[in-house]
Length: 389
Ligand code: RFL
Ligand code: PHB
Image 1 (spheres, rainbow, N blue to C red):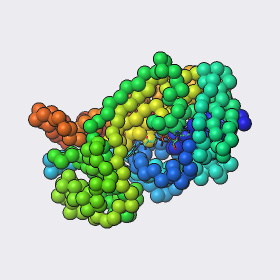
Image 2 (tube, rainbow, N blue to C red):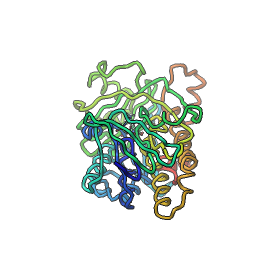
Image 3 (cartoon, protein in one colour):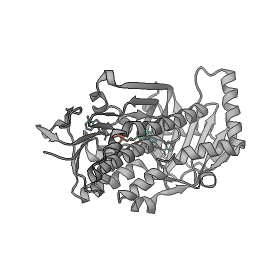
Image 4 (cartoon, helix red, strand yellow):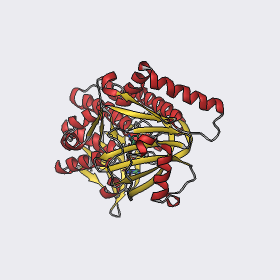
């Protein structure tokens, strides 16, 4: 089999890239380790930056998002019993879109399938060969048979645990990592959201976040120990703890109910440099991870897709290699800014085991400054709605 771009991974990065290339008449094959239902069962991101919204439009998959997604013009930040609002629309002229990653992925799968796009599920033993030559290929096993997919380029969209990043020889790649000493316990429940905008809360018992998917589907998170297990948290225990971390005004509005999903995610910052090796390009979680505070993971994956798609488009349409040659440099410049924002917002909002009284006063002073200073709020808003590509 032969294609122009072999895409490893059928998560949001791989599917979005495949669909954008298809619009430009560039052929790709997506190789996914799991089934479509498995990928759609992963509850993850909920907030889309304006750049991802535009890419969805360009990919021709934005109709349902515009119908069902919720436009948010600001967010609430709670601390020490108080709550203040950061207004995105007034300070930046932009908003964000609350629309689940599950829905983004579903819309992309539907579009790829409607267009006869090739997605191979349940692939195993994926190996990227000859990425540093002009004739790369990908070998894999599917349905018990070995296959070979020849291509011009390989896009490594296979997430943090995929094979693509490790294909770049170790002596040519540098990895930067910070592991946070806590995780997020999240639940999804068929209850109306506590508020029409998100609430990020710094409380003395730890961080909490009130988010949503739609008018009758809420997503809540609380900071938990890294060693915590989902089985240790009954729904009642979760709601009790959430209430202890939110200001009274929010608790009064909170509607609780049975959880329909419950999971724990560790928090990590990670970047791999460079993001390309010969004809192999890394996209999304394959190259970088951010802690979820500030919702930058999926959005940073989308900005990678933007740079790679445009580089490939220039190559095929104009014979211009500059976009693909500079892919890593361009993508990383934006990745590091998203890393900084996610690290800053995480550091501001969580409780750390070894935090001294001085550290706590610094956190409080920074929150007070953010609550009262228009320039500080503008800096946050610019990052939250998404930096320019
Ligand atoms: P994914 O989604 O991990 O998809 C990679 C795909 O590759 C497949 N795969 C392979 N396929 C073939 N061969 C192999 N050897 C393979 N190895 C792996 C996998 O099965 C999978 O289908 O990466 P991608 O596409 O780069 O997308 C990244 C996003 O999923 C991720 O950044 C976000 O979910 C992060 N994130 C958030 N991002 C936001 O922008 N806004 C948010 O509000 C937000 N909230 C979150 C989040 C992530 C969370 N968790 C659980 C990590 C909230 C949480 C709780
Ligand atoms: C979510 O809705 O899952 C969500 C929202 C905002 C974040 C992280 C996760 O910062």
